[in-house]
Length: 631
Image 1 (cartoon, rainbow, N blue to C red):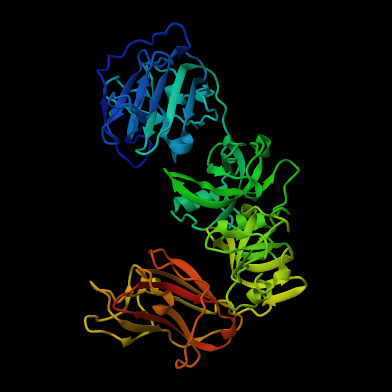
Image 2 (image 1 turned 180 degrees about the vertical axis):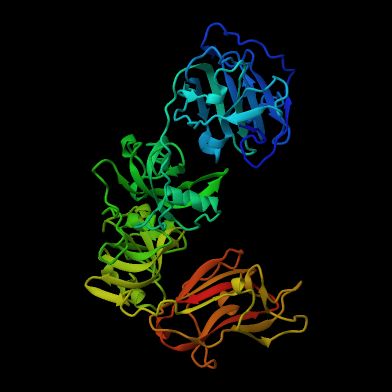
């Protein structure tokens, strides 16, 4: 036995004060009519409240037909509820066990709602017992915790269910007076609601649960080796939350909600064993292949699933991000769905992504297959043209069907300027490629504001190949060129050459710890200047193909971008050429983005890169370069 010096945390000391005068101990109201039964835990039950943890408010509400504890109440009587950190006990009257023979148990009916919103909620509902409490001095009494595992309600209403028989420790049997204390805690930002009725102490036996088998954390978060739930929860406990999309595997323990209407998503819990403990919260996830749920039998308790998506910590609860996850694999009995459904593909040469697969696996690299159905003529997805009239060379769109005209079912594809892929398949120069089946490799990432494919390096169409097939001439692993000014914390071994530095300016290019390298010739007014930021000699391995620059630009104020900022390349540091970038920042905001150029012609060569900044007395934009890579 031990003196209670904590409420629910073993390391937090508490002080307690009575919320009302406590009567002298009195006889068990049903002393002569064992067993003891209290219908609504009201008569004779008193509350004690923490004064060191929480607000000091009473979480317990002893109604006429129930007792309820919650941290979400109308605290000031205004009719408006709010959350508070609260902690307190509900104490029974004196209970006699000296007239009971054999084992003694307690049981009660209860529900615990909203547990899914509270991380660690299992530790916030506890039961204690004492035989030296005098009905007044709660702190001085010796209280022992009675082992009990609370279960969160799987219902959306207030249905009560039995706790089952909970064993009273032998030291408290055959005693004149014992007291039971129900402990409740609610953190500041979230709270369960615990409702109880029909508390009973009686002769009986309680089942002895087998000790749980420890689950070893395992997995690497890939499709072939997903995290188990123990590993995923371990990562959250270590504050090592994955920032990229990951795969994790578990058994559906509880389905909170499954919508088959316009939302088409499901909220449920998975665990390693299928039990409703040590669960991970899957919040508003989609069905297989990122499709919407259309039937409630598509997901059932007991299903083994692999979920793919982003995860986060929200209101202290580890969970998937809203609608940023989907089922990747599901098994029910002896009928598993294949890990790589034919509707999605796996992104390999032999099993390329379909359009749905490409949309579901953004932030990865791989092959995609579909029919060329058109192009985007302007700057928005709504500028899609299904045909070849007025075609541009910079992009195409592909779909599962050669006759598709719904842009939401298409994938926009960037064609890198000057690349063999662009030269061979763009519809402006190759209208015969219209409605031909295409296999293409690139980086799955947002394009025209939606799921797309960029940095394309290889394609097969109409019996022809374009570009270098991945693996045919790869650069050595780990090689290429990478420079991250922001992370490095300086300009590194790059040099600055001021061609024109007017009086009134001491520099144009300068390192800024917030953004990387920054060029500007504006101090209260625009100055005419020219300044170059030049790389050291860069020895490129064979196989490199793409220059990528992470940059932002603002204050262009209607000026012509090419008159002010350009990326230059040279093989001798004397003769320079303008790099044909596939795109540029708008020049009207501070948004960073990745912009690319085809560098396959420089593979295996020694080159120099320069960022050329030019301003006038009427236009002096700000150019920020955080990092670049050639790979």
